Image (cartoon, rainbow, N blue to C red; front, side, top):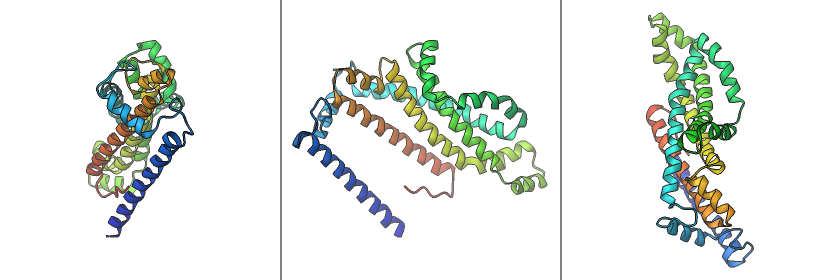
Length: 263
């Protein structure tokens, strides 16, 4: 009962804070004219622009749906690749010493380079298109996947492994029956962090060089002083990221049982 009351209180406070934020924004733009339309668009203007962009391609050459789908398609492709490669790599590095010795020097080198720094190189190697952005996202998302999977496996208690060994479990059985289930919370945390890194990287890659996507839309409208379209793009980025994070939270709740998934 107390948990439900706290959750309702949190929701009410969140709604109130958003209302106050948009009220101040509206007062600073359309009412008091602290900011002009060329520097900061009002909330009402942003809503009108969003509705307009649903069916019109001006001024950046694409509807909002086209840009959202372009960013989402590339981001999810790179993110999925990061999960598929990064999580097993982290698990095997933690469990098998030869794999750790072989992969760690390369991984430590890649880890030290910010994910965004790979975007210009990928564009030179692969051109302006899907592949360069997907690889950039993959590199940015792979690092937290590897780190968290590695840490999760390493945190497996020796007593659990000893019990499994006592009952005749092989090393591979201990990995899949004991170590990986124990590491699942850390692995899912890595997946969440990787999502944020991937989403940030796609926008940055589109800002540098692209022909479509939310980052491209923001960059194009920056040059022609259209803050209303820029804010629409920013809000869409935030909304898509929140939806994907919510979906991952649902998956985590199903996979990792017994954890508290509060706000």
